[in-house]
Each structure stands twice: as C-alpha cells, then as structure tokens.
Image (cartoon, rainbow, N blue to C red; front, side, top):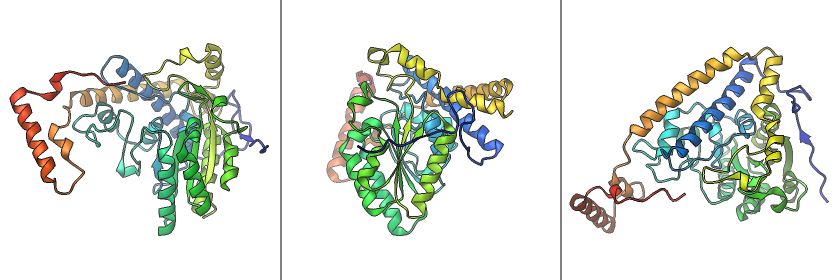
Length: 372
C-alpha cells in the first residue's frame, strides 16, 4: 500500500499559524482575501440570477475559494490554464471584468464565444484560459499536450489542469498523467477533492488511500494540501510551478476541500448529503479562516471588508444590468468561425434560414427552455 501523503497546512481550522507561511507582503495577503470574497459574492449573485430565471445555469464554487485563489496566485503570466467549470475564481483574481463573465452567462452578442457554450464554460484568450469542456476530464489530456508543446518550444512557463476528484476516474486522467510523466512536461495537475462528484462520494470513486497517491504510478510528485488554507495551497502550487519550469516534471496536487453548496444550479445536495457533514465543513470555511488570521495580523477590519463588499456588489449590479440588456447574437453568426470561406452548402443553409425568419418571424419566439 502506498504511503499516505502528508496534508500540508499553514493555518489550522481556527485560523492560527501552524507552519511556516509564505514570504508575501501585506498587500498580497489582502489581495488573496479580496479575490476569495469577490468570488463568494459573484457566486451568490449567480445562483440568485438562475433562481430568478434570468440565466439558465450556474456552477458555484463556494467553499473552494482558497483552493483556487491560492493556486491562481502562484501562476505566471505566461502560463496556460485548462480549467474546470468551477474555477472562474481565477479569472476574477486575474482582473477580468464582471461584464465579460456575465456576457458569457447570458450568451449575448458581446459573449466572446457567441452563446455557443453552456453558462460557466468561459474562454479568455488574453489570459491563456482555454475553453472549458463539459465532458469530465478531457482538459487533462489537452493540458498535458499543451505542456509538452511548450517544452518542445523551450518556453519557460507552465500549464495548469483543473479537475475534481471525480475526474480521476476518467480515461483522460490516465492518458494525460501518463503522457506528462513520461515527458516530464511542465504541468501542474490540480485535483480539487471536494468529496463529491455530483452525488458520488469520494469513497466510491477510488480505492486509493488518497488521490495524491495516484501520482506514484505516473512517476511524478504527489502533494496533498489543505484546500481550505489559502496560504498552504499557494506554497504547494508555487513549489510545483518552480519544479515544472526547471524541467523537473509535473506535479499532482490533491487539494482537500469541500463543496459548500450544490454541484450546479440543477443539483440539490440535501438529497444525498447529511446536514451534519455540511455543518462540520462550514466550520472550516476558508474565507472565515483567513479572515481570522488577517485580523490577528492587523490586516483586516470590518469597515474595510464592508467597503469592499459594497463596491463589488455595486459593480456586479451594474454588470448584470448591462449584460441582461444586451441582445442575443445575430442568428447568422451560427455559420461563423469554422471555415475561412463559407462552403456553398452552408451558404445555402444560411440563406434558407434567413428567408425562413423573414417569412415566419424571429426564430426565438418559437419557444423552448434551457435544457438543464
């Protein structure tokens, strides 16, 4: 049996320093907290919008903010991101505007993927954020290939692949880690173990003692970190990136955290989770833990947080109004972005569709609801 990987911690569950923390400046710590809090506020607004019927679908990340923001802060500007659909927190950390996020959630005319992806399936070329895929685990093998390509080119950067513990049961997990391990590709595999692959608990997902142990089979380093400790995650991710860039190979990081809410707006965790389990993890809330630590360091006070919260809420409200008022993409954009020159067959289909709309009216008025 493989040796159980040590759980790395800097802060204990009460927010007190347990181990040696990162050598960051006071403003860095504040930035981490602001990004975590802004993500929580964005998630709350997103779930409300879906419940109000204003967007069709939303995937929250409440409870996993430290796991994501800590790793995101260790990324380099030239790194590539192959995310899961729960990692929009990193886009928030990188300073993307709320409007760009909301445009995608509405799939409107300003949406960078023109309404062709499900909500929460973001794609941002300027921050090297590759489009999210719904099939579980496919981004893992994509990331491994991209990392190998960077290695061949001699680029001193890293690729990050994000997935949940359920993603380790996918074929792409094996293919991706095996490939990256063989080539020592500069990749960090971030496995967020939030204990539930929708309604499947982790004990039904694997016979391994930990998910970090799986790294042994692929000849790479496996690290297990407290995913509700933003400072520990940052330290683990920073070291993994440094190893990758130096040519020392990939790392599999198991970030042990908990999904404090539904898998998505289509899910009801009360149907398969005991309330006592949620309450026990609620006491380990990553934002509250870090808040306690910041307060002890005199880097936090209630007035500071209240002012920041109000500003973010105002910004979110304005972005929502603008995104909601933006019309849907023009119907003819259905035929864009595949061929440099539209083939005759598609030209005929496009002309036929536009003629049908001219004769019968707007195709959207035919009805139909979001499938989820």
